[in-house]
Length: 223
Image (cartoon, rainbow, N blue to C red; front, side, top):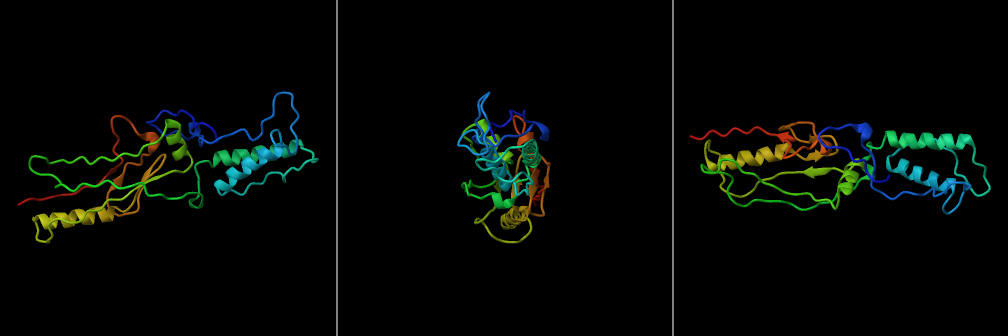
């Protein structure tokens, strides 16, 4: 739940990636202090609630002990059951179901000038997704966060005759549509469409100065 592990990007090693960047401390017992069945700071039930909340977020069916109430005994079996639940949550920490996620639109990036010419054969179109901190970014992807991309083209010269600008525009429109939605997560990039190929790399496999994640081949023959 706490600060995400400082995992070096460039490779994806699941065993060393964890942390949702959330607050912790539900069971706040000091050394030598009794752990009670139910208390505002040193209660076993507090830890139960937190593990159960993570299990619910991950869509898991936990098998831990019944909730402890004031006056209940805490046995070794109760601790073992709760620790097994904690391990189940940890082992499934990347398997966040869609029901626990929400989708929000974060703007669009567009270009209205012409795309390329004899003097400018390649165009770089850049947009930025910003996070408040490195921990925020890691926590986002660790907890099932994804970045979704779509592309579209409209306007300009129309027409279908081979070798014309209208035909070229039509081809670009079709290409971007068939690419579908690109979904970028902690260790992969997938497409819902039928065009292009993914390099199978996600956030933790990004390298400097840039990383190629997805490629589409488009042939243009000029006459």
